[in-house]
Image (cartoon, rainbow, N blue to C red; front, side, top):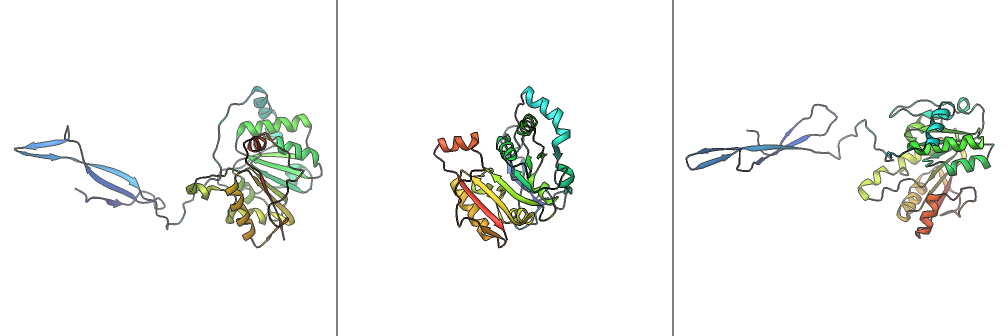
Length: 279
């Protein structure tokens, strides 16, 4: 019989160890009776140990939670018709180089919208800012479809929509390729054990900043007070970013009030804006 709490290696070298504990079973079907003695069988229960000191595996920690949702007939039609024209698939875990001039059919300053939601804000900003191109990245299919429909209805030629992990997309962009990055109302991941999933953390900020041109802006907004302060500390710590307002920024007129933001304001959660420029 193996010893208690025996540790055996898993099949794959990069997987954590598996710990096997042997416990006594209930005295029902799993016993052997001999004279006045009863021997109970021991049952193996295996759990996985995660060694915090071990190197990370190839599977990256997600900064988003994929959401499913039903699509209306209008959204389904928009996705079918318009995705081949305006869409860009981001392969999962793969860095694919993105030619922005080829994607938009022109050379113009580019704004990256991370987490465009249902697309209302992106469509309104792009309509009011025709001299810049807007690349929105989202994982929520109904939101992608809705933005495509808005783009089509408004005849916006300066919007493209990417589907996939925003960080994988950014890794495929040339350094200095972006005029601005917008991170509006990202998932706050409020539980402490989930903070590692937040998109605004040092390594991610360094990546986003590297894709900004000198003078380009990184604009974040959140209605979660604790996350707002954590964002500010993280952005302040980046040596190549400068706080454009010396603290939380006044609400910029170019950022439309969305339904999501209005719900936050109605619930009494103030919205914080942070605007930083690359040196």
